[in-house]
Length: 132
Image (cartoon, rainbow, N blue to C red; front, side):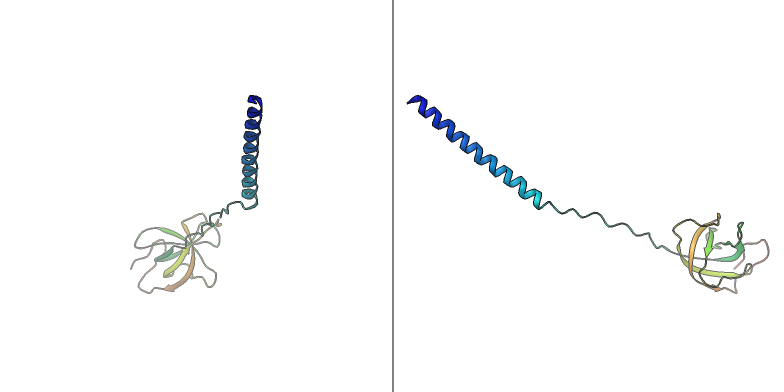
């Protein structure tokens, strides 16, 4: 009977192993049917930093480019207009947003101008940046 207990024990062990294996396969199959949801990060939007400056409108080196050196900071801006453009030699103040992408003008920080106004207190002379 010793051999019978051994066979019985092997049979119980094999049954237990088969049961565990079946549970493991079922758990893996259930996980494959309902994979965890992974959300990709949302793309970052370009920063719309508002910029402001004032000075004399000058012609850029490239044709049709308008630049302005800010009287307060000395920073050079490449001004991009969608509507009316101020004439070269006029003192203006402007507000706009940093332009994203390439431009044909190779001078200054490109700015998409949202509004501008003539500023009579800025006196522009040929070859000068203007004086408040």
